[in-house]
Image 1 (spheres, rainbow, N blue to C red):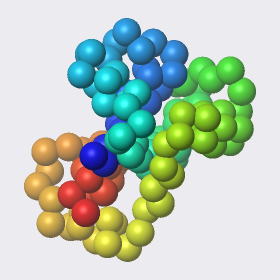
Image 2: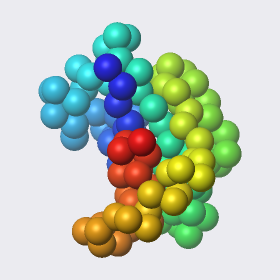
Image 3: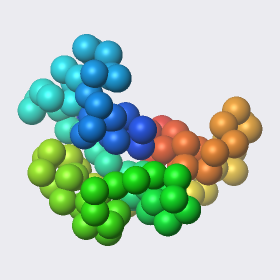
Image 4: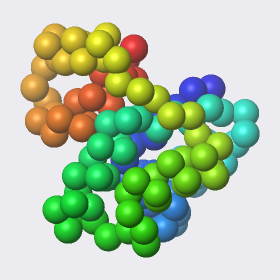
Length: 107
C-alpha cells in the first residue's frame, strides 16, 4: 500500500516514535508499504529550522535526504497537477504545507 507521511509524523518517527499509535508505526515499518516523503515536508522543515522553530542535529539539507534514504522512503516532488489542485480545495486547512500534502495524497 502507498502512504504519504505527514511532516510531524515523520519527525516523530525519527525522534519520538512512541508519539505515533501502533497502527501508524506498523504501517511505516512494513516493507510491503511504500512510504512517500513530500518535497512540501522538506520545505516545511527547512523553513521551520531557519526560523529557529525546529532544532535538528544537523542542517536540514543534510538531515532530511539522509533520513529519507536511510528509512527507504520515496521522495515525492511537487508537480503542476498537485499545485493546481489547490484552487479547488475548500479552505479547511490554511497551512500551505498541509494543503499541499492533501493535494498530493488526492492525486
